[in-house]
Image (cartoon, rainbow, N blue to C red):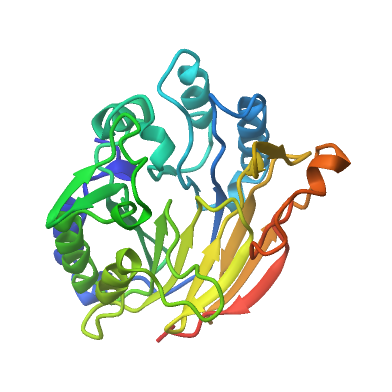
Length: 312
């Protein structure tokens, strides 16, 4: 079993077996992150992914791990080329499931394609704790049903929920460590329009993440929105990673270059995001019709630095 894809329950058990003397001092971590490649939809998705792999491998000695935040590829002919490219990464590499990964299959099929053993899991690097979340569930009454074969095209209030059991496991995982924690999810956490409250789907996740008896969750990193944005929720840094490929507005409005980022965490809580800047690759008539009220809508990821507020 690969350490990078250990089920969260087993990782909880492993963390619980450590003694305080085994806990490493918090160090610097650099990870590479890409989101919403959309292989099977974006015509040049594979080339964009290969550019990311090449960029990571060129500096592999300085990168601790790579992660993609969902909407990776459709389960159809040609998908193997996408997963094979990902597997050429020379650093530990992790997947997060996105809704479109279940357009043509169910959750188990997507995990099999990507080589995942669990859709929720955690891992530690240099004194930091990282948790991958699966928010790909429909809610009907008290029932939570995983996305499968495009079943998520329903009312928004039923979409993007965590599984009930996943929430229990998340609470247990965070209770098992005191390391500062960063979550990765496809669906956003903490991303709202100014003045709006987070929706119930996010609120119940934050109820777990902000438990004062658990590890301090300092940041949530997500995709899905195809935007580049930093917001704060209860002093948790919420970072939206732009799509590698395009913004959607009455159709695909592509970026000229593959978009991704390298994120560096330092022991004192400083964060530096080194993003790829690009340009729109569309006719002026298309650009003129882009909405102007979407926070973070831009063709790239801006370079930014900030300090984590909840770091102990």
